[in-house]
Length: 442
Ligand code: ASP
Ligand code: MG
Image (cartoon, rainbow, N blue to C red; front, side, top):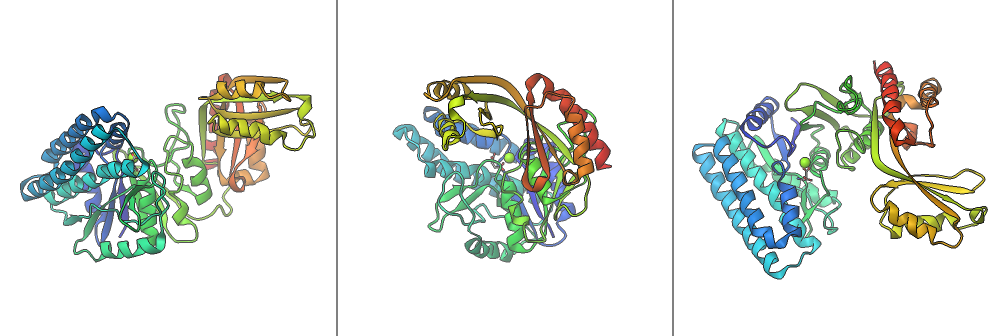
């Protein structure tokens, strides 16, 4: 009796849907909750409608066509007819909103979430019709399964209130219930969203609230891999990850998951299985590190700049670092890593490339700053419970010592280490470290 989440990237054509239906059929032995994302590309289209409001009506018309076309391929008979009526009804509502924002030419976070909610709501109807047409007994529940606060765009789930919604879903008279991921509603029934990629999070929260301890995230890749196969051709699927490792890896690897996906696993028996739709392979995420000496994966974060701020004027002065950080904040720059030698003569920030020039200009203008330098760098991140053990960590450091490492920092509970290196060195370092990963994962 699992919660099964169907990703958006694997919902684009007939073939996808026949694979999805067979997956769900094989898991749906008892009551099963299926969480769905919007069809491939739809959330991006809806976002673009909120931004290019003069085109909103055309975009909605495109979205409607996409759903009807797919529906006509994956469903038939009465299941098709009913779904067609429901999709058309939702599309009508969405057309009205599209016209309004076109005329008003205005957008608020609340209206944006209302608009985004249509992607997942329409998807539940298509998926449900496709299941019914293939004789899987199911029903669609196209409304938010979770209650949240009113922080539109990044709403927080209120578990107590959501539990009541969840009970309604469990009481529905159907074996399989298809619910929308990513969206929630406030106590006074306004649509909210949980942030991009939020349907993974919906699935794990539902796992926790229903007591269904197995959550399967079905996606285009067969689990989380030791590294991005485009960079490391010998990358393999990781069989098992602890919670800390999964949190570290899912923030930067080839498979990005919503940052709160694993939160419901803390202090509960929920386990998450990330599995492929097209290729066999899966990763199980559960529990803590224990005595595991494995190193599990490598992720390279690129498009970064190292900002070095030099001045003898900042030595030993309280508040110098705060000044530098404040400039970063005011330039809209996201800081990825921070370091400073004990002599306090330099402060180094690693930031996302966009706006780095602006930051450097502003820092140069500070009276106490003598020099600011910008350099292209990458962050090579190694993740694994094994890094807590001296002999394993030593081996990683030994590989890194062949390179010009600018800084080293450790992550949550020491299960990760990040090396900042010059851009032209990062791939070689990552490849060397990936060999260490393969050695210690087996
Ligand atoms: N459809 C939403 C997005 O594209 C949520 C999700 O896919 O999980 O961000
Ligand atoms: Mg998605």
